[in-house]
Image (cartoon, rainbow, N blue to C red):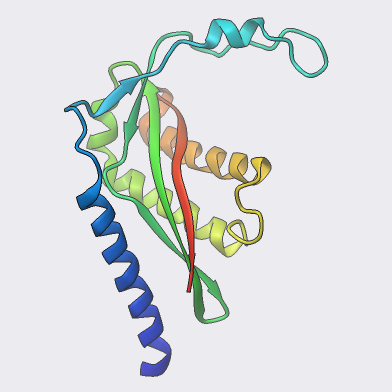
Length: 169
């Protein structure tokens, strides 16, 4: 039992040390927890879609904030009972302007819901092979956004995957 558990513990400890080093060496932000997104809805509405018709505008045209969650998400990739890789992701939540504080107030529940989505995605093989292709990433973003909307309501506009890395063991 110890022989099987030791590689898992070493992988988790190594990933934790790497994440800790990355956080310690990361540049210090300029004091802003959120950034206002440029308003691109008018440009998107004017662009034709694939079939040549006008693309529908977003439901809301106001400015949005992007709130980066404080810590990265670490997801083990299992084959049988063995950890074969670790996924490390950084996520940001897109909310309507002025609703950034709600993200911080609900962060523990958001992290829990996001982790469950990430674990389910890993168990379905979502992080195997070409895990960064557009359709796979869209499915993952959509599932993460559902969790955000369930907790934050209509203030949550989406979830951005700002960093993603796979470390094979």
